[in-house]
Length: 376
Image (cartoon, rainbow, N blue to C red; front, top):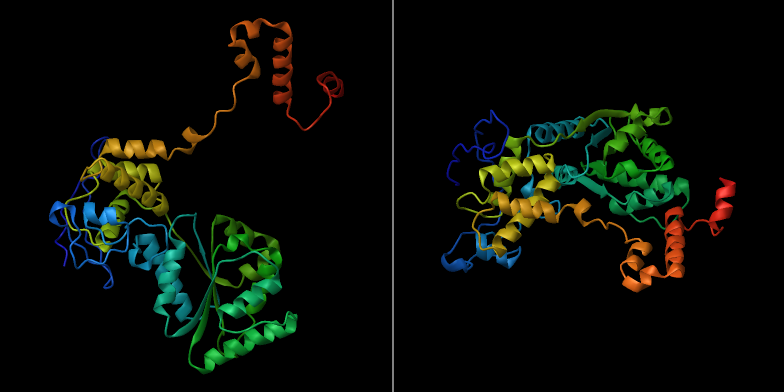
């Protein structure tokens, strides 16, 4: 049992005026969470099974990487909107509504939540998680049949549908429902979306044989709002979404993931750092993970027990893609102009100017500059 958490001010040290103290509540730890303990001298206790980077175990007593990129359900943190979305999806499945949609920006933890839902129905349902959304309607049906445990060597449309129907009836006779989740559904083509709509026709006189959850980015909402997709959108009984974390949830999220990874000790992130991470990440879990992981790496390299503001500042600078973007080559005339006597050569200067004009105009046309000016 972890000790109770005290109130900590995550909005101080550079946060906006009027910051308030955040009330921290311990989050539940999964029963299968790896247990780790800190040891003197940075050595890993002999009974700890280390699954993550060894240097994190040595430095912080972490049995696992708490800020990994895989959808590990042990690390699922349920903010208010995450908890509401999960509850809505579960209710929809229990009520056999047929179609549901989960729509949220990238990096919000949709896949992790969906895996968590499938785990709850592991023994009570046949489940399929589809993420390869490119292809034709026949490709999609064959993919679905494979994930439901069938075979689809025949590409005939009617035979594919009959195979799916037999698979669904088999599961129903065994007392199991069938749940299919289509991830990255915003990438589905219009013909595949129409195929999905037709799948809703698999039913008995009293219930649906197939429950489908479409999960995707906001483009999915735009697609479903199109009049051409009206027949499909009318069948979607429940639509849920996810909102970015608040500052409080960001603090609890980081603490939750550290605890699940087995950490016990003083805070690894200074209060001001938590506020800066929230502001920098926009409350997006994937961005929070990226900042926290790189900050721990740098803190370990600097032999620091806690991530401070200077460490986070260096991490954010390193991750700044605008800073890493090439600024473009120097102008040929500038290069030649810096070569002393070469720059004074009239022929080389004219050549440099011609090359610069050609670069500025692009290489799409091979016509000389004079001809391009007449066409303009």
